[in-house]
Image (cartoon, rainbow, N blue to C red; front, side, top):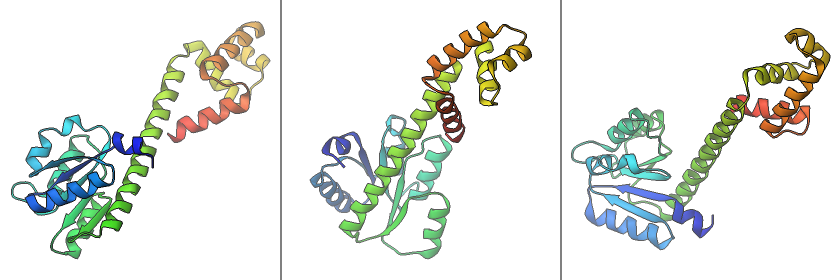
Length: 207
């Protein structure tokens, strides 16, 4: 990962232990990360609508809302940020519950620095791929939305393997008109062949 990637990615540390929190912030900054720290779940919730691209490192037991409660609130609020839960008291049942809720990892204190950093790399990779999928889906949706109703009809029939004459007969238009619509469909979708059009359609469905 490049330094630029790290600058664009923020690690949010939420822990009520001041000394531990400050030590963790120092470690992460020493490895090039942008870090924001908060002493409680409530403090983080106050700014969570500003979170765009990052990872949450949160203690499981804190005064007020716990780390898992914070995770639940974020999920329920539509904020899906990769979350790593930390605990000073190893608890198998709690770890199982955390994983079932969708957290990335459950780490016991004291933290293993190398494992923590590797975990963050996994979070970053997963978050980037999620963003890429979202961008691809939005791009595909924009392209499809740019088609007129008639162009969409032609588009669907091209994907069904119909020839221009078959499309013309089914839609009650001339072959020349089908050719014009076909050309516009290819241009708007950004495809240079029917196979590229098929790949676009399959990709849009997967996203």
